[in-house]
Image 1 (cartoon, rainbow, N blue to C red):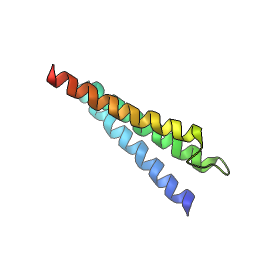
Image 2: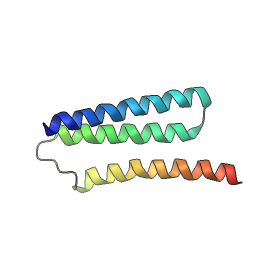
Image 3: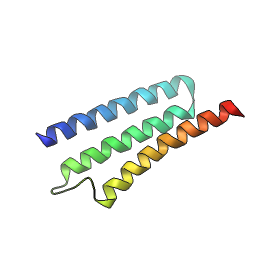
Length: 86
């Protein structure tokens, strides 16, 4: 059951990344590229967690991938707010 849920979260992440990529294609705003990459990283991370036997979310490799994905979201928001304020 856990692998089924991980697969659903991974699929949702990949689909969300496709939506953001589509928005980027229409607007050419880098904000959407950062979000698409973040969701694709999170989806790949979930696939790896489900595919590797005895993998744990708290292992440094998986944690660092998630940290990178969230960091991309923070950078996207920061850059977007910086453009508006300047």
